[in-house]
Length: 156
Image: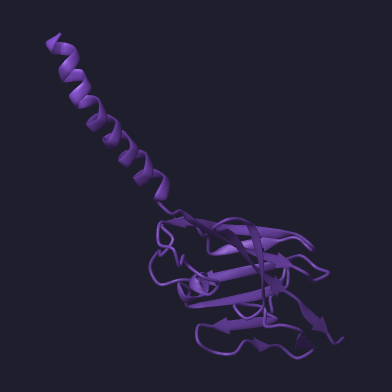
């Protein structure tokens, strides 16, 4: 009989405690941001990224070959902060980037953090190839992909 009375007394406390744990876990916010580049040029390109140190802990490489019409996903980041990372987070971690047609020696575009992109003679900017033009793809809820476009006009 005493066991039943103790159980009746502690059962509401146990139920309330479990309810609080479930509410706490379900309220934890998870923001996901993916960063990728889409090559809109008619040629395969080589993209070189320069970073001080290793801000992405080895997950982002310094060299990418991106086939024509394809995209490469650089990194997927997660945080529990509601405001997340934003479109410019990836760019702020880099010092500079260079772009050339795969197999060529001459760079057709150069970008330095905080400066305008520079283009070689014969190419014109359609959109800045880095950190200026992007497409946000919402995967639902707090999961977004920021896709930068590589699109230049060949004046030749």
